[in-house]
Image (cartoon, rainbow, N blue to C red; front, top):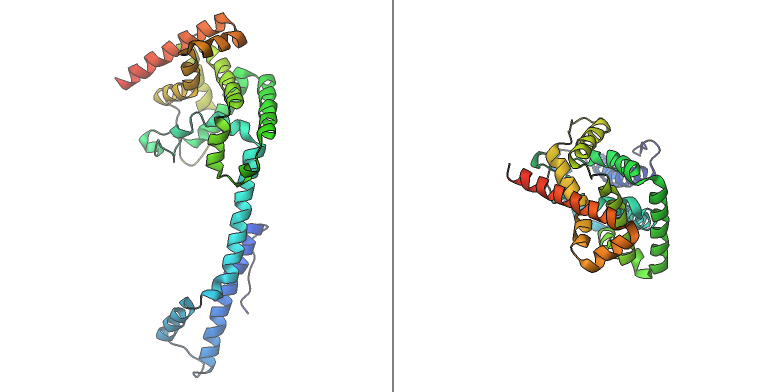
Length: 271
């Protein structure tokens, strides 16, 4: 019997390690049986014939596939659980995930944001918005999810669930408030932009590949983060609701911030 040496303390890997060796074990036993009947040796040609024979025995792999299939289903279930139980950070990142490497923006070489930015991004959010407000909105979003939960939510593809959740008006309102509060800190736009560049670069995790958060990255990020706030300000009814929540002075500041970002986007587009 072949010893199925188990990888260290990893149930998922261990189960597939054992399943793979089960198939190899059956193959080896067949070769041993063949060799015993042919003088104790076996040729390369006979090994190839044996492999061809195994390809025709689909049931040989059924047990191994059953293990893989069950674990894939378990992983999918855990993904859905993560969507239901930790949505707030994912919703915040959804405002700019199209700029991250591996998505529509392509690779880092194409100008995409490295995923290393996520750690300093959340630090910036905490500093600008404050933990009290973030914790309150996090709690409210969980309450909204539970109040509107449907049985079919558990069956959704995670990506589809994010779209479904982000379009919920009450959720969207709260995420917009976070970014509106953040945008207020950019009333002195150039100074705050330089501060953001410095803070992000100082807090990037060290990795094998060095990546820097550039001014061009920063402008695209701000444009994406505040896109919904900009849209609210163009609709009188929605902007009036924002005035009711934040006050007319803060909303006037938001308008000036959006003008600064728009001018910066145009400047980089023409440079």
